[in-house]
Image 1 (tube, rainbow over the protein chains, first blue to last red):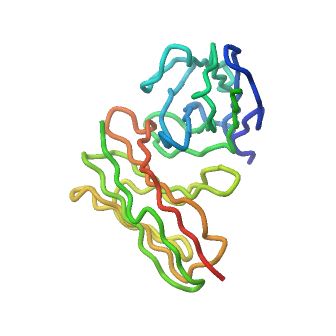
Image 2 (cartoon, rainbow over the protein chains, first blue to last red):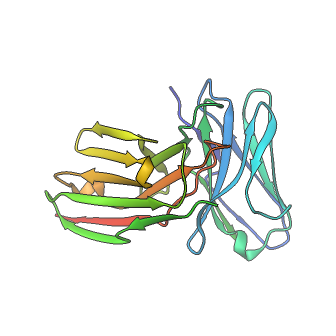
Length: 113
Length: 110
């Protein structure tokens, strides 16, 4: 069974640009969550999608957005990139409510110059 | 929101030694997972353990939800156990919105 797939694995952007990251969950999983990891703030919850609807959102500005497609694949977008957005972005897959166990992908490492 | 404290922050062991990592949380939880982050950044599931005790090979975990703590035991440590270990509980309302501790950096020396 394939795991959680994130693309791209590495990318470099400049300030002011926007970026889109993609996540394909484990087959049969319908919930996708996104987390940001930085050296200063650690791992922080961004948002969760289930059945194409955002279910929960963390404390991040509106520049961070996401969506989920009917096949459960998810994308997150960061607009008007700032230096502080440099981070490892991790996607997690779950069966969906009420299941709570998350399975993470390898992450997308974003560098903003 | 829930506060999560992990201890110790750093741990250096000789290969073959045993260790206990602790996770304290400030509120009742409906989900708790332990992860090992590998050198490439991926979070590897160790345990899904909102309560009780589980064992998987040389690793075991115990969560005492009523006393708001969880423990991860590593026995006969190996160099491949090195990395960062995270505890991540979630509160009722969304089992999938995890709050991560700051982690324990484990180094196992040969």
